[in-house]
Each structure stands twice: as structure tokens, then as C-alpha cells.
Length: 267
Image (cartoon, rainbow, N blue to C red; front, side, top):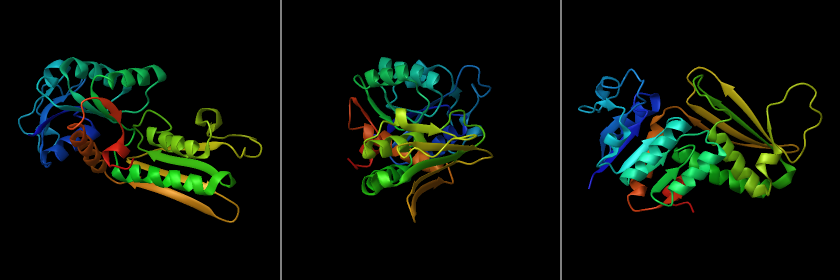
């Protein structure tokens, strides 16, 4: 059976990458493409902006798009994603969510949705990033409190949230391995006379500019040496391929919330 995929935010950079990846994927087909109602692309053929999307017209009616579909892939904004998830519940559709920037209430609503349908929720769908998270856990446990931890991330000028969801997830993994509370011990940028570094903190630094797809480095700085674990994305195709793996993974699950470690069998 071919899985019917609905792509949200289909006219965006990630949406176009997904449409092209689906066109060349075995066992998947593009069921529908959706955009927000005020998008100038609504009513246009997706093939005009994305290769391999012939015959698909961009729509704004989420319910119509989801009828008969199997999986929604959503890399949009938190507010839009939450509306899309409610529509998924109405139609019994599963979802792959790569959106970042959810607040506590939205995260709780996602957890509730996972009791009624199957979701893969991950701030980064890259297979390489998922492997990096396991390496970070190993490094943090082995290096321990003798090494200061700093996380540096860089993205394109259009990204609206900071630090990135991936950087925050990296921080969460390191903090858990070290037995720290990230919310209480994170530092977001430094300016002026800050005093000596608190050994328990985990620092975040953010860069925004140009068309950087996504760079993340976690620095473990000790006395006499440092260890750096870096992932650099040069194309959104890597996120698209990961999202398609996640969609296939959902075919064998009816309910629950999963992440990319589940998808890759790393748990």
C-alpha cells in the first residue's frame, strides 16, 4: 500500500523539499498540499515551485486535504501545527511534526493528541542529528562535570525562534546525562561584566544570517583539551528524507508520541 502524504507549508523551503523527496520515494505519494488561507500560492499548481508535484494544487482547506490521507508532515509554525493536529484527530490521520517553538500548553496538547493518533515529534528530522544526540549523551556521561558545556547554533536569516529547537534538544540531552535542570542552569548569551563562569551552567549562542541551513556544535571544554561534536546541514533534503522515514515508521503504530531515536531503532 502506498501511503498518502499531506504536506503542510507546501510552498516554503521545507515544503518544496518534501514534495520533491516524496516524488522519488517508494511506497509514498503526495496526497495533498496545503498552505495558510492568505498565501498567494493557494490555488496554484505545486509543480510550478516544486519538482515532481504534477497534478497537485495547493489548497487551504485542511479537512479536505486530510480526507483519505495517511500521514501529515508539518514543518510550519506552532499555531498552524496545533490547528492541523486537531484536524488529524478528526480524520484519523497520523502526523510527523518538525515544527519548533511550542509553549508548555501546546506541548501538553500534543501529548494529549498522542493518545488518539500516532505522532513523530522531533525538532530535527536529520538522521545525522539523531546520531549526534546519542554521541552527546555518551560524551556528557564520560566527561562529567569537569568540562564546561557550550552550544553554538547557526541558521538562515528567516528563522524566527532562538535558540533552535535542535540546540535546545541537545541541551536537554546533555543536561539529563549530567543530572542537571536545563531550565534552571541554561545561559542564553552573555554581555558586559558577567563574572566567572558557573561550572554548572550550559551556555547557548545563536547566529542568524544568510541561507545557513543549520549548524550545531556542542563544545565540552576542559583543562588542556576540548571535545566538539558538530553537525552541519548543507541541504534541506536531509530533513525531508528523515521525515519520510518517520512517515513509514508511523504505518505500524496507531497511537503514541515518538521521536527520531524511535524511528531509527536507537532506543
